[in-house]
Image 1 (cartoon, rainbow, N blue to C red):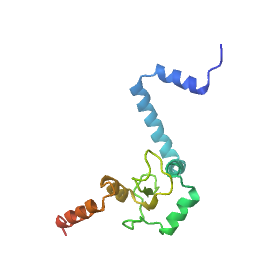
Image 2 (cartoon, helix red, strand yellow):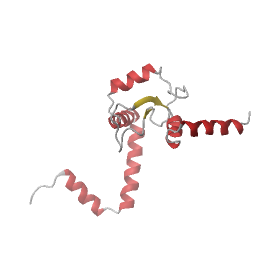
Image 3 (cartoon, rainbow, N blue to C red):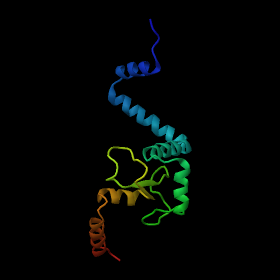
Length: 140
């Protein structure tokens, strides 16, 4: 009998496991690993993010130094992510799909600014209208 590869063994094991039980156990294992290895988790998330935007670690750090460790929009020094990695803003109309060409990158943003910009679909008029709305309902 031919020896099974590790991938084949994993597939066979998963086929024998109830899917919900497997997912719950995997999620628990990942949480435990993340808590036990916070620096490795941060490095893993950073590598994944940089790969998505065709950035090297040196380019990322250079951008972060250029921005003095602050959000390119609001100026906060807190990236707002659980793993301390800044969001990489890019022109969403440039590249189709999940990955960026690297030429359409703008600045590093905190999670809040990046989310707001994405939800507004990079529409400056919508963001200005939202700012007017927020000021109108501000309770100072």
